[in-house]
Length: 248
Length: 322
Ligand SMILES: Cc1cc2nc3c(=O)[nH]c(=O)nc-3n(C[C@H](O)[C@H](O)[C@H](O)COP(=O)(O)OP(=O)(O)OC[C@H]3O[C@@H](n4cnc5c(N)ncnc54)[C@H](O)[C@@H]3O)c2cc1C
Image (spheres, chains in turn cyan, purple):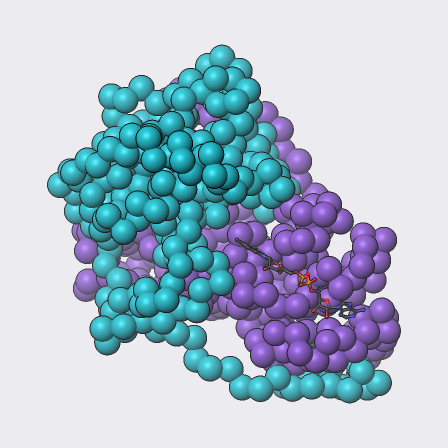
């Protein structure tokens, strides 16, 4: 089985968000970039398929040279090869088109992307990719087993979960649940040394449009101070929620 | 050239977000000088969408589409968009709508923007405000494609009531085996409980509750309020509560009218997922807990003393306002 894990390079989850250039760009000053958490769950599941079922695992990302530490980390975790598509991601459609191009004719059986990246939260890359490639697709995937050519996937739905079956090739949008949090891997010294020997292919992007443009960003309005209610006078909270906030 | 809106239903009944996206579609149509047409699947009362400003409803009556199927639904919506000449398509930002959103965008070569929180600022070209960076920011996004798909966030726009009735037509999309190549074999859904996605009020518990045996009071509080229950990430990681209740940046997003956080510190990753909620209440025994900076109302106190009192007061309030 040949697996491609799509990796998005995102600001660390604790990052403070600021904008520059008259609020038209995300300010990367002092921001640490990491593998998108949803992709990390997918990558770990792919490692499981590698170790238990002998799968080959490639990772791909769309980005300039600055994203290489993030994909090196994926190699250090155990991916066999990496592909960097040398373009600045502009929107979800553009990214999906680039990744679909890599998948085309490469014989991948399974393509794992994250349900969304935690920076722009578009959540459309796996769906667009699956549709462009005419492959089966399961989103918000929290469980995945593969036997032969058949996949059984579990997806999260509002208020529960759904089990689905589909044949390969398959695209999934993964998230927490695909593996346990405690199974996520931290690269060790040996992995980091080995990653240096692994192939990191840089490919040029295909010509593809962006269908949306972020014109401007803004931060949420600063919030007023919290109104504290005395723990011995809990009824006051009920009154405030009814009369002031009008939510009950 | 109408605006097409996909209105979700479950077991034939419209979900709450259906009325919200219908209202949104009506507002967009008015802005563009056109009308709103809805597409729904096996809905029991399609004409009722007239109450939210939709003038025409295409009801797909097909037993194979009784339960949600991303590919088949996306294909049906795409066909309806073509039949109606719709260049603007409105969907919700629910898990199902996000599942089909990308597929639909690729089919129609459309620019798709999910998590939209307000009516378009501009309609030619379309510019919408959406959340980004897990609710730590907003983006004003222009759709440059000829066809636009707008995914409206829950509870962001609200429901507009217009007493009217919509005309109903049945719509029969052409679907083939390929549309059903992903098969649902089991649905495991809690019935009779409010889900986080639909809830107006969410009551959430964190590690401060010490253990799963203490969730009785969280559930009781939720029941009094008609709320859904949720939890912080470590709580679901430790198996005190199911994964489906984990909210935050890597969990479910919450955009309720009222979010009550009990024994939750308010770590940045937790807040990122719940900041879209309108009113936030925190109950925590540590006055330095970061959640107090993000909350509207707070009680510094022991949850085990405060919550039972709160339940009691709410019961009294309900009895008086019944
Ligand atoms: C990549 C990444 C992604 C993450 N994503 C998420 C996410 O999506 N959602 C999420 O929730 N977290 C997420 N986290 C974890 C997050 O950083 C915090 O660890 C987590 O939110 C803490 O949960 P908590 O507040 O329940 O627990 P704690 O941090 O242990 O806080 C418990 C709180 O309860 C209070 N308390 C204790 N006893 C009482 C009492 N008797 N009465 C009242 N209050 C009491 C304490 O004062 C404390 O503030 C993520 C972390 C990482 C690294």
